[in-house]
Image (cartoon, rainbow, N blue to C red; front, top):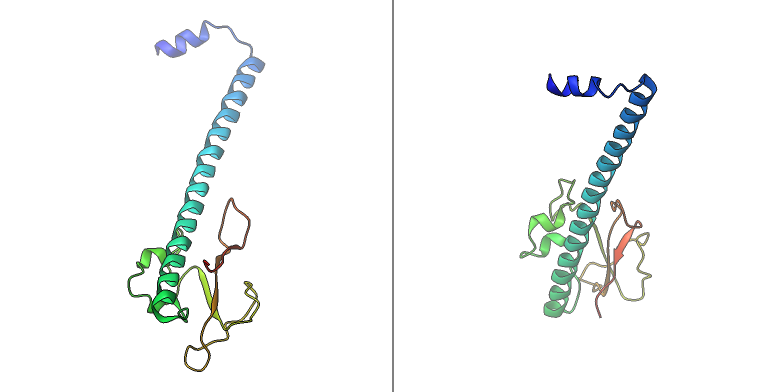
Amino acid sequence: MGLMRGLRKLNLAPIEWLIIVALAGMILALAVAEYSGSHARHRDSQRKDDLQLIQTKVTAYYALYARYPLNLSVLSDLPVSACRDPRGRGTCSQPDYTYKAFKGGTPVTPASSANCDNQTTNCDSYSLYTTAMETLPNPYVLSPQP
């Protein structure tokens, strides 16, 4: 009751109260927008970290076998969480991120089709990307490390 009594003593006209409420609403809207933007940046950072971890594991596989894996499920030491988008439900056998292996000489783009089998044709390159970035351009693509 003390607050209401104190506010009544201000003797503000209804239009002045309306301006105060409108300003408070705008400040609140800006705070909410900044809060959700920071969450989107954090999820994008998680996606980049996941893709970099996958890239590291794929490169280690290449160092051992002189070819890239056909899919991510053959990477036994890859944590399932790395195959899952922050808002997804993926697994390493069905990841939320896209991984494709290619034979040598194939243009490596997100639109290219995987065309090697590691039996008759070794996988000499790959494409690893996501189209789920919220604050960065899509698709976000990682290329093989030299």
